[in-house]
Length: 329
Image (cartoon, rainbow, N blue to C red; front, side, top):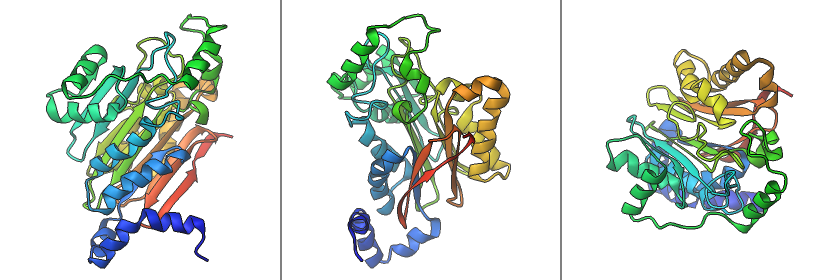
């Protein structure tokens, strides 16, 4: 029976069907293009990225277009427009991008720009630098034609006002919402990685960071080697959750290096998660971190500290959501 779900799947792959008729299916099947992203709701972001992959485009172009979906979604309060503000009521954004040649760009503590991933791409391509921060990143964005926008929606402003009623600016005091840090309702990022028809990788991370974070706080998402890393000979990895913990172990880089040693993507993610436990001990039971990865064969995997972490995958066979295994149940 050709039900609604099948209809949506076939509609999203309509352009791919045309390519089949043109004899392109054989080329696609050789490298089995794939895009995966953190968290189940990002199946929509994957669909946008897949359009680029299905037309033979580069993985880096696919991920850049894909992550712009949650960046522009006011209902996603962990990424871009509509993100939760910091403790001063300001929405600040972080993002990074990396291509198959090792080129990379990042922006941190960026205000007023809806699509920080696009600015990160320009940092990669139009400057000799990898990272731009704060006022300098914003100035560069304006020079590149971006417009300053108010990114604080009424929904997030309301949440901020509620927090202010009992707020304590003590940096060692964790707001109530942050007790769920790294979980689905405060997951801190979208990380997306892809492999294209040529067997090349691309990756992107973008976030508005933890709700009510200290002014100026930056997590792992815009840091190459922490929130995202690619080695075109081996594979790609990205992270989500409590960024400080990912930075401590250079998480994404660790995952990729383990795959270099022969670990499967899932085994590499698991070993990296367990490294957090070895480093942080009992503290790890209070945290959430998750990793996803793909290797040169197109195999994928994910693992997390706590249950509840999901990731979305899109291939020639369509879209699917996976529940990642975890250390703590």
